[in-house]
Length: 229
Image (cartoon, rainbow, N blue to C red; front, side):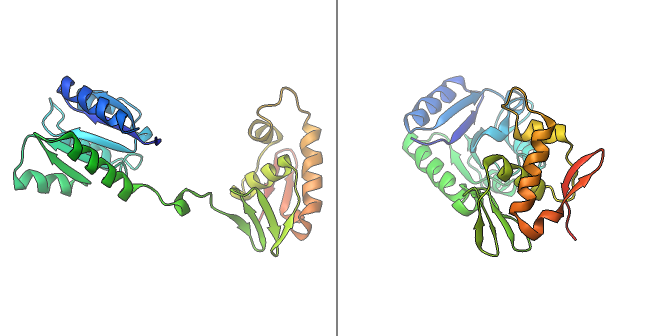
């Protein structure tokens, strides 16, 4: 099984259900929409692939694709056009709009499955793209994936809360976080935490990261920030 989510957009309800049934048997999570208008109201960023019919109502598949490609939030979602039209011009139009593949009706379900697998394999982010990026300032390095902090290559032992505070400040270098901001982001699951708890953790954190401790600056009346020289 896999975690890929697919949205099938076609005004033929029976075809949507057939594709949904067969793709779910392949292990995909599949939703359907019977018009571009309906699909555009959905949270499209949740999907790894769109199967998009060309000939639909007022908003055609081509027009919907054009709308998606102009929006930075949806521009990278892979699209496979499905259509009864099989002319060279239509195919070129589809690819010019950023389509990743083009399937002509009638088609076999094996063909759809093969093309879906090929597009997802080609467009899936690599492990390096999925891995959290390192946060660093000079020789101070925070590895969000491994939950490790090092200075000059030597690991520094931090508590979970100290690690989270340092990550928050380093990721937003120069931004001032009030105690309330830090409480909401770091202690969100705690019922009751004193402001003093934050001050104690900051004090310990400063000591543990040595020369970089002075980079965690207190803005009186406002809060804390990690300030570069």
